[in-house]
Length: 248
Ligand code: NAD
Image (cartoon, rainbow, N blue to C red):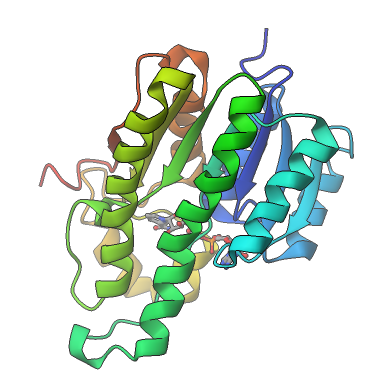
C-alpha cells in the first residue's frame, strides 16, 4: 500500500523547486495535497495535472498569519482532515554584510523564512490533533547549522526554525504529532538559478563531496520518509541532507 493513502497534506511553496518535488512524491504515495503558494498560477498548473480529487492550489503569503490560517482551513474543508505538513516556502536575499541590511529587508526575510513556520505549525497542529495525529517537516537549510557571510537574516531564520522544530516536537510528541527539520545543502532549484552565474554554481558544487548540487527529488525523498510511519521514532531533530557539506 502507498505510504500516504488517505492522508491529507499541505505543502507551502509547493509550486517550485524542493516543494514541487515534495508535492509530486506525496502524490505518488497516495496523499491528497494542498499546494499552498504565493504563485497561484504555478500551484494551479501542478494541481491540475493530478485532478481536483487529489491536489488543489491555494494562494498564500506565508508571512501573513491570517492567510496561513486560511490555507489550513481550506485543506480541512476540501479534503476533510490534515495529517501532513511541509513548511517549505522560503526566500533568499542579496548578499549584504549584517550592518548594511535594511530593516525592511530583515523583516521581509525573517517573515517569510521564520515567522511562516510558526504560523504554519500554529494552525496545522490543531487541525492535525482533530485528525488523529500527524507529521510535520520544516524546511531549514544547511545554514540552519552553519553560517554564511552576507546572509544574516536567512541564517538566523533557519537556525531559529531548527529550535522551533525541537520545541514543537517536545510539545506534541505525547499527542501523536512528530516534527522534524530537514537541512538541504545547495539544491538545483529556480531560486538558486536566478541568482547565480555558472562560475558561482561550480564553486557551490565543489562544497559538496559529490562535486554537484543536490536535486530537489533527493530532498523530497527524505522529507517523505520523515513524514511516513516508517519514521515513527523520529521527532525533534534536524537532519542535514548535504552531500557531506558539514563533514568538510
Ligand atoms: P524556489 O524559489 O524554487 O521555490 C520556493 C517557492 O516558495 C516558490 O514556489 C515561491 O512562489 C514560494 N514562495 C516564496 N515566497 C512565498 C511566500 N511569501 N508565501 C508563499 N509562497 C512563497 O525555492 P527552493 O530552492 O525550492 O526553496 C525551498 C525551501 O528550501 C526554502 O525554504 C529554502 O530556504 C530551502 N532551501 C533551499 C536550498 C537551495 O539550495 N535551493 C538550500 C537549502 C534550503
